[in-house]
Amino acid sequence: MKKILVVLISIFIIIMSLTSCKKSDKTIILITDEAGINDGYYNQLTYDGLKKAASEFDFNLVVSTPKNSSQYDVVFQDVVDQNPNLIVISNPDMEATAVAYAKNNPDLDFVLVESSADLNLDGVQDATNIYSIRFQQSQEGFISGVLAAALAVNHVAFIGANEFNSYIQYESGFRAGVTTINPSVSVDVIYIKESTASDQVQAQVAQMIQNGVQVIFTINKNTGIYTAAQEAGIPVIICDYDYSGQITTGKKSIAFTTEKKIDQAVFIAVSDYFNGLFKGQIKYFTFADDCFGYKIIEKSVVTDDAETLIIAWAAELKNRTFTVPDTRAQYNTFAPPQLTVQDQAE
Image (cartoon, rainbow, N blue to C red; front, top):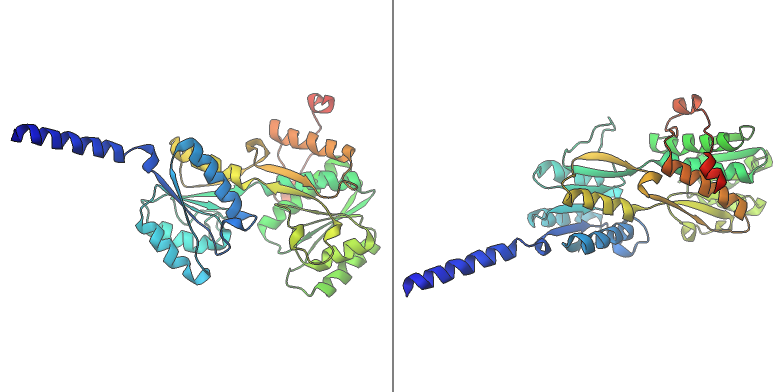
């Protein structure tokens, strides 16, 4: 009888052990910033991508949100102590904290949205267990340049915020898009800090418009840009997501935005994890990955003909290999491509 009892207990232990290893016991923890999953951008799109992945790969999704930035360390330590399969950090402002915890926990895997985990900007990740989600921003710039050249007669402008490499990617792609559609259109390039007094920026941009600028592409949220454009009736192209609701004055000038599909990129990263393809890397997502889209905000400005042109060049980026310049040096040697016959027929 005792032998039978021992056998039954052993079988029970084996069954329980097998049950504990089911896919449903896998856990991914999302760390957001204090804005939480309803912020309308980084956190929300990351969460959406994880929800889609959870339905396919059957894992437990847990969200951890600090009350403020001073709690980042507390939240990260708590998450690390839970030893999840994967830790996803949704806001680039948490890059330094993510790098520190990844370096101190080399046996854990991390996904970092919109940051390279390269704090000293030497082009090499500071931790080898971080999958960094980045986007080929020059492609956003290119599509924006295509539209700007389609809307303008002879003069457009790019307005950046900081003359960093990431902004220069947008700038170089934008200039390439303009050149591809109409090489006779001139492009003004200026950088204005977002913290500059809005009335000062408004005066500067108004002068540019007076000098002939007909379309503005910007990744700068200084309201002076939009106020000047709205008063002059000049369309503004923005990028990454529709932040027009965050612009307090001049937002009616915003006509179009490209959009980063962060949810799709996160889904791909999690798919790589469960398919055994996960590794520490800086992964740049593109139109070919279906990780870019666009939104027409002002249909009276972006006409059907203009949208047809956008669609054609977005398809070209997705289906055919040609290099959009990421730097000014690359732009200087850029040879404008031609649409394929198939694209033109469509």
